Image (cartoon, rainbow, N blue to C red; front, side, top):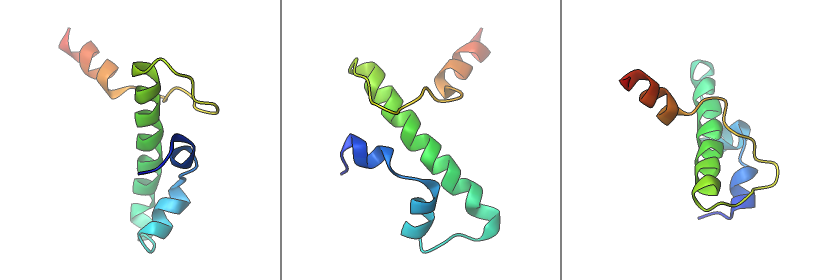
Length: 71
């Protein structure tokens, strides 16, 4: 596992390096991975009522979109 600060430092470039590179058509997957990590950290912070320095709310919350579609 990683500490919160270590997880915050993970970038799409770090993801690509950990995978020994990605084909150009799959680079967007590394961006999705970075966004998913930050979204998971946001969710953790919300549930534990803590503030993580440098962490911003994700652009869109999948759960909110699902709830809107249900109505």
